Picture 1 (cartoon, protein in one colour):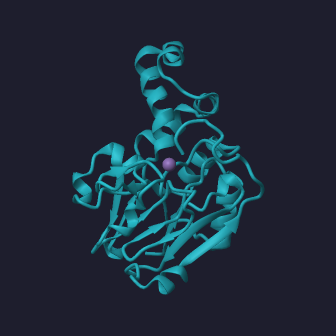
Picture 2 (picture 1 turned 180 degrees about the horizontal axis):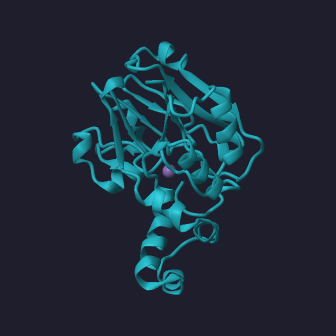
Length: 245
Ligand SMILES: [Mn+2]
């Protein structure tokens, strides 16, 4: 078995995804790629990202943006595209993504789980995070796809106010997640946030684990496992009003 390469939110940045795979020297059939979700939207080439993910045999969890275009696709499967256009509320940008994806690419996204456990690394991968007051397996879909913070009442929320959920999670399993580009890289005792805002012109970040390597609790040791590539350009302004980030 080769390495496990956990990659942050790609958001349609196919060129940078390819840059990252080259930069870590990804070996097809040996290394395993695991994506933290939000493969699509915001960047220039969502279809290219899904195609690259498929072709390198990547595992991935579903992100809230993946779920958004999937809600359109599921409706269109049952009632047709015209009905989906009328009934499923999407921003212009998400509609463009939905139109760009092939059936096969939608099929790939539809098969993505909400959570991937990698016991050999003592690692759990989810898109947004968990409610630290519950077991990860007891968290609902909404939380796993959108949580960012714990508010003053101790409630899990998608808002940026409050403290990051990752600071409240006491393990023992390490959770690697994405979804929170505004907070950028997060290195907490038992959680690592990898969304470093590639689509906003920042970086695409991966955590590279060798076979059987348990994610280190020590932050400096964990930071050494990170590989980043710069965005080719700013693909999308932050807060451009096309739905939740
Ligand atoms: Mn997200």
